[in-house]
Image (cartoon, rainbow, N blue to C red; front, side, top):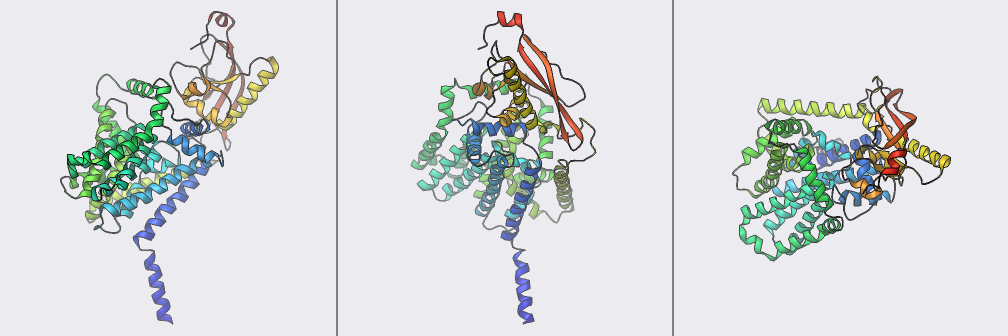
Length: 505
């Protein structure tokens, strides 16, 4: 009897040491951690922006393709809470991790069964992966990008029409997620050329994939055609605004430092080492990963020298390098320097996660206007106060209902989301999605202007042709700490300006 119990105990213990079980525990554990983090912090400005995509459902939007909006629209059938807006990205990231595990096993079937687990472990050190509790275009792009690599490998092994169709659908979904997904199409052509030669471009399946991808991204093209190619104009203006007249080595190196921090020292060093050590190998799995990772990293590294690149644009490249980083770590684990790098990077990642969990807690001894989360706090209350003030003004004076006004369109998102369907109009010259949703302020527009400051001073409402009078203030509190102060102004056209000015177009 004791022998049987002992054997059962050993068998039960060994189950927990299996790579599949460990993988499930790792993915499930971080999903629960992300749900906890999501419940502690209010929505960021860009999250409310994408939530409004779902509230204003359309074929596309001026700054991004429609995928994030379509996903959030599905969530909004059930709930509009802050936590609900974060369920979809957490689910998508969880699915991406499982797909990455399956992809690693498919690409390297003869490697250690722990390779996929180590790949995930390396990725979990990246701060930007944990930031995926917030919906952004990179979240669905990652899932569909991994699907592109999956079907690319299947096509190389079994070029049937079903695999080609899956590849085309995956590419189309990437195009619906983010414009930078075009790099995956370039990488695909490179893989096919290196692994199978030009003849693959003349197969029926290849053109089936092209047609499927084109059909799926057609809503983006149709919307742009109907809106004077607004997305392309916006993206071009954005790049021209951020780019300098000369390529800057300083800016390019600065972006490398950002990646070193955001993607973790371990993934950065091991990823580059894994890519270098894999260079020239003829195995298909390695070639596929390098062909998909390196164009992304090299293209955005070059554009970062012109100042027009963000650190999260590199996400797909580092995820594609993660299996090669894991292979390099496992083969060099006996080296003391490698173990020190892993332990140091892991300690830093754990520290960052602890800080992320502690910062939202109320009662921390921050000075007034010194809370690091000040930009996230108070928007819902500010939106409610603005709504109350504009209704009060309407009751006092009659006429057309005043709108809510902002002088920076990035802050229109929280006010519009929490006050939906309130009109929130941006007083400025640049084009943005809020101009399409709510229009421009006209010569006779009255509005409640919402300003804020993170220091103890009153911001000025200095708008040409407008008369703005402060009518209220609202502190944003975290415990007893004032994180910022919101200021509310009644703004109406100045009498002389209103008589002389034609409506803005």
